[in-house]
Length: 462
Image (cartoon, rainbow, N blue to C red; front, side, top):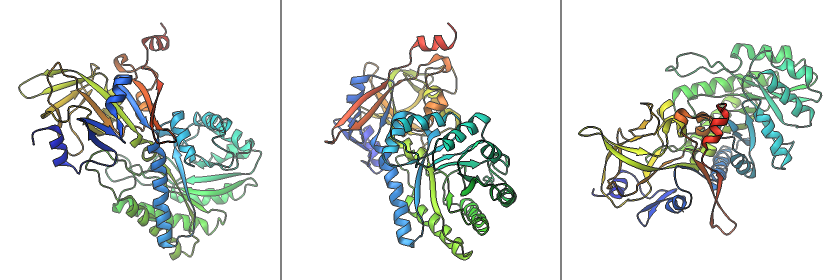
């Protein structure tokens, strides 16, 4: 192996569906990234919008295949988990692909209203309202119900939440119940803080929902923090949940839907392997088997994919500002940004993204460590998902090297505090949207310029 491209080709299957190299430079979904850099500069965030609808339609296909294979009686509904990315361009692209919405806080509801005003979201869309709800959140939910949104579904997270809707909702409304699932044994606590205890579900239905003249139990909600994995833990918790659904269905005939939450993983390495169709087949088959065993009609299935919807559409691109040899064997590539502010999951969760050079693929490679601009010792990146090391092209100091972190489209802006005060006042980078026109030609649009010092000074009171 002499060059960087030799290293990639001999380590992974290459090229891959979303990555290929042409003229010594990387392409992302056939988008020549050097052209984007030359036009907009770095650092920059990039969102390839068509990937959002591609993943949505792919998930629908997985469930359609499973339903057909198993002759499953029920419908599938794809909700988008808004907390993954609230940006308008994400919401609009997802809604164009026909998704419904899942919200997490009171401030999601004004977004629902804005999208309705634009004609992108109708009063027939499902709006699944999750989370522990403060008074303002409950107030906004009641406003939607009273404004004629037919499929707003507040998912009850505590035993008294329904009292707010009983008092304020003027129209009939649907509710869900979130089950407090047990966490994986590695967690520091045993049961999720969110949701209703298994032992309280039947009492909640009988004492409050069944006695209401306005409320109708629509769904039972299930979520595993560690995602959808082929493990004994996941199948055990899913089976326990479906058993509870069957028990509840026998006394609540109006209950007809289960929401299995999110949890589809996204590709974080060029060596990523995950059989989505197999997992969907197994989920549907388990639901069907348990329902048939209990002589209960199979439910409609809802999901709330967030990272899966938007994560793989994103990229974050940097220039290497300089090289620093700090001892005999540690060479640092210093980027023109910060991992702590731009990609907070890197230091907060030790998350790995796909890291590749943008240019100089024909140059020799060597081992490096990557450093961010803040003065924090945690602002670095020194390993990848498949390796405890990072390799990038070897270039002279007067040569420009660009690098990209890929599939960074979920959570990073909200966790980093987009548009607010960043650590060491490192600005949020510019954001470029990449799309295709009706003829299939690539188009780009600057969504936001790099954050200015003036905007930070204003927030700080100067």
